[in-house]
Amino acid sequence: MAIPAFLAELRTLVGTRPLWLPGVAAVVLDDAGRVLLGRRADDGRWALVGGILDPGEEPADGVVRECLEETGVLVEPERLTMVSVSPMIEYPNGDRCQYLDLTFRCRYLSGEARVNDDESLAVAWFAQDALPELDEYTTRRIGLALDFKGETVFGYAGPPA
Image: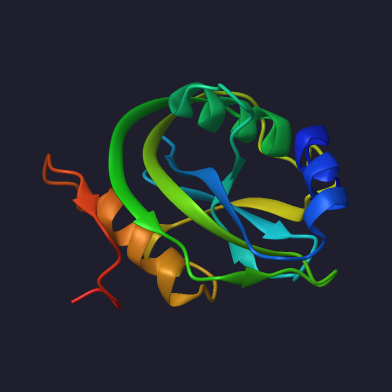
């Protein structure tokens, strides 16, 4: 899985030490209310589409870029539903990161969902009542986006109630 050039350069300096990075994730809904997910190439798990913001990139622009790059789907960010700090993540190569996560609820605009880069093994739409196995953090972010009541949630408070 390729990492952005700025991050690869930074890793030459810090090795696998934990990094604090800005990240975006999209809870993409189509007209039927299905959720778009990607099966990650690094760990094989289903996850939200998203990634690291480029230096100076606006978060809403970043989430649109990530969706298009990873899935071939063009989206429109509708709401910022959650601002949180991810758990510490250790990748198979030993790199460790913690993310300032910005989760957006996005509306599908166009494109056919497909694997569009080397970050995913599969891309698929799922009915809300037929989601694949997901970690607790992802489940929480999807739940908040689906049940959005007009206020962004700040912080991760554990499993959904």
